[in-house]
Image (cartoon, rainbow, N blue to C red; front, side, top):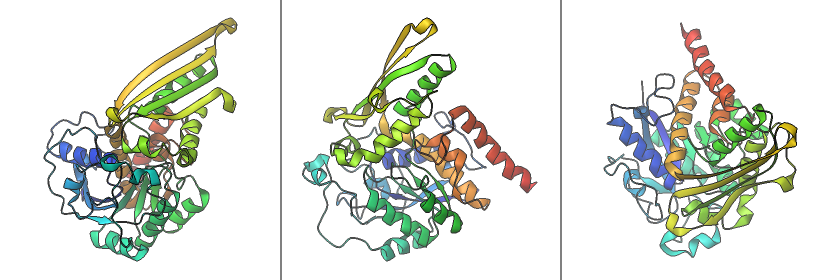
Amino acid sequence: MSAIRVAIVGVGNCASSLVQGAAYYSRQASTRGLIHDYVGGYGADDVRFVLGIDVDRRKVGKDLAEAIFAAPNNTKVFCEDVPLTGATVIRGRILDGVAEHMTTAGERGFIVDEGADATQADIVAALKASGTHIMLNFLPVGSQEASEFYMECALEAGVAVVNCIPVFIASDPEWESRFRERGLPIVGDDIKAQIGATIVHRTLSSLFTTRGVTVERTYQLNTGGNTDFMNMLDRQRLTSKKESKTEAVQAALAERLAAENIQIGPSEYVPWQKDNKLCFLRLEGTQWGDVPVELELRLSVEDSPNAAACVMDAIRFCKFAMDNGDSGALIAPSAYYCKHPPQQIDEDTAGRMLDDYVSRFAQAAE
């Protein structure tokens, strides 16, 4: 198979885990930890990173393999010797991509030099020159204007997108139609984790429902010490994040809960946790004879590797769609890998749809 050429917007912890993982699996005989070993013939070692875009001076100008280890990144290092990629991290455009409080936090925040931001023409030229097939959006939560800027760049450059953050692009009919008209696939919005708070919450909610238990109240409270949690200290940036996570859980319930009975979203920034995320989850319901049942769960995960597993699959499904002339929002991959897809579909059904999606094109080629 030919290489899948990927550009990354936002070289943070998620980018670090993804790039480390691609290097890790390129030298491992085992595929343990991957959700799918292959997607349409593409393995993890077929992914090549050809461009990085960021605004932090500690990353701009460096090879992507070096930039992923620069502060404020603090995710687990599981592959220390990532080979140089030959892809230089270029300066992007800030817009609303950097919250004000993130520039006053010293080494733990963002350090941005004054100077001219990249123009749309600059980014489009870089995408074209690098031969990018797929652009990943890893910008901070709340980056509405910045995300829309990069979507415009992708459309002009003829590049597909995996939208990993809770800015609604794939799930917005106007944006989705623009990708479809341009003949470009998009997977989104807001990437799930391999085993994370949302997928566990959805699974437990579905379990209650299928076993005849009515969920009366539920919460999901999370703490972490990475830049994502620090960024979300600005609660004004959380509107789409809370909607994305809440709707993902509501979709798994037999009946929607009133707003006062469901609380889902980031809780607190705890610096010493670094990229470790703690989820405290509670469901209250009634079972046979209206007798109450309660469940509490504590989940501890390294946040960014947890997301990288899903992004690796989404990249490969996106390229497979490009190869087969499919465009617009990819329904099954978006539903399986994202919290706020165009259509909410339970994991079992979406998983079967993924297999059918690959089989359908394989049969057509025979």
